Length: 343
Ligand code: SAH
Image: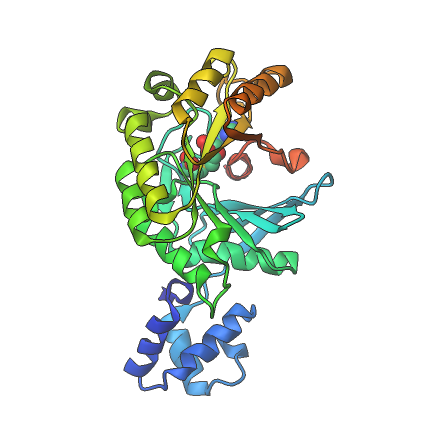
């Protein structure tokens, strides 16, 4: 059985032809699915025989919403979703004045091992397929009853460690017959898998690339991110330059501020020097403390000083606004708490 959400319209049109059906049936099926009809039997304009064929070959892989948490502070919601095989992921919907943004997961767990991150503690369980990633957006729109206009691939998982599924997801979510979300409204965040950044640049998408930098030199970076042993900051920045030159899209650098590790004034100056002259934006993320490690968030003053220094060097910088504090716990924590309850 195949998840029909993993397929493009062209692929299902071909399937229709190969199975003795007119190819326009594919469009009919997709119209139903994208209007949130997730049962072949409810697709009223399809002949019974086709419904049977579809049921024998495909399922519509919408995950079950096991729980929704809604912030009373700012309307942020978190969805805990379960796939057919029992795997659980979380996605977060944030309401901004420019539209609804969803933060989605690309893998169940993660194998990158960043020290501050809750999603990676038990490694990678499996990749999500393109259709499963797409379903996160579809189910969120249904729960919300509103359109989602922006997507950030910043949930659990390393998107470039699941390259084929993630790029297919971008094609599907961007398709006019589908959710029709523009590439400029999609941001992909990576810990810096350099060869894949080049590959992505060559795809010619106009999505925003966000790099989890978190340090201004390799030594500090290696302390908190195992991937830094494989690729140097220099190599990452070269790949970012390539990405910018190919796509014209300004790079966004994420920098999680961890007390005593990367948050001093000297660090701020060095970061600014490193990025000087680049078309970029720096996003400071005061680290979300998790109970599985001892990493601490700097004081408000340290964060403000850091921001000011980077800004004074002419670099566009913001501190990430915290949303949904009351339902949050750190990134990936919700799923972990749930898994613990299950045990
Ligand atoms: N694997 C991708 C995307 C997922 S994480 C990546 O590494 O970019 C999205 C962002 O949140 C990354 O910048 C990540 O480093 C950061 N992050 C993860 N856990 C965090 C925590 N506890 N506190 C602050 N930032 C965190």
